[in-house]
Each structure stands twice: as structure tokens, then as C-alpha cells.
Length: 99
Image 1 (cartoon, one colour):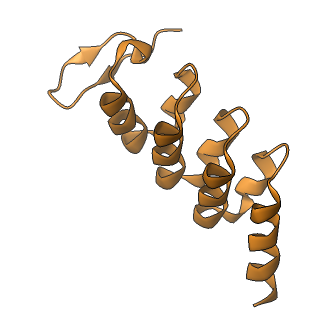
Image 2 (image 1 turned 30 degrees about the vertical axis):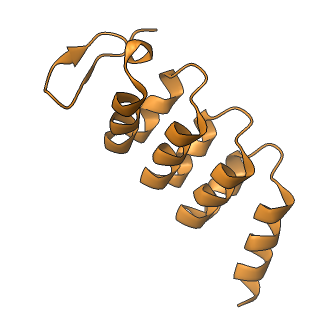
Image 3 (image 1 turned 45 degrees about the vertical axis):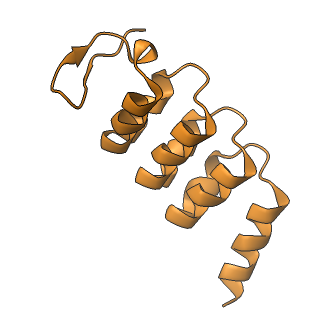
């Protein structure tokens, strides 16, 4: 699927997957859901998306533990979208809920 978005120079880009990594990061910072259309986003792009909105984790397949943790720090219910949460994420939530 081709997603049209506007890059930093206000030019429309017809396919986000043809954009540079920097442009992808800027795109997900503006609209976190665009990560759903990026094929195999790297960790940096994933982090930018979940830092914008923790719920972006729902669009990331097999997120890295650091990405998982960042998502639940931003949006507590992001844990609902993580199929196999890392033990560090579960520990963070347990500690947070006992304070």
C-alpha cells in the first residue's frame, strides 16, 4: 500500500517505504500510525513512533524490549498490544503499580 505523506520540504512522497530513515522518523513523529505502513521499521523508527504515542506498539511486529518498555512508559495500556512482553517490561509495570 502506498501512503502519501508530506516530508520536511512540504513535498508529497508517494510511498513512505521509499523515504529516507530520517523522513520516516519525522513522519511517525507527526502521525504515529504511519509505522503500520513501513516495512520492517528499524529500532530508531519504532522508538520514534512509540515516543509519539505508546499505542503505536500495536503496529510493530516483535518489538525490541527497549521499544516495549518505552511504549508502556508512554501509555500504560500499551501492554495489551504486546504479544510476548519482555520480563523487564512486566517488572516495570509491577513496580509502577505497587508504588
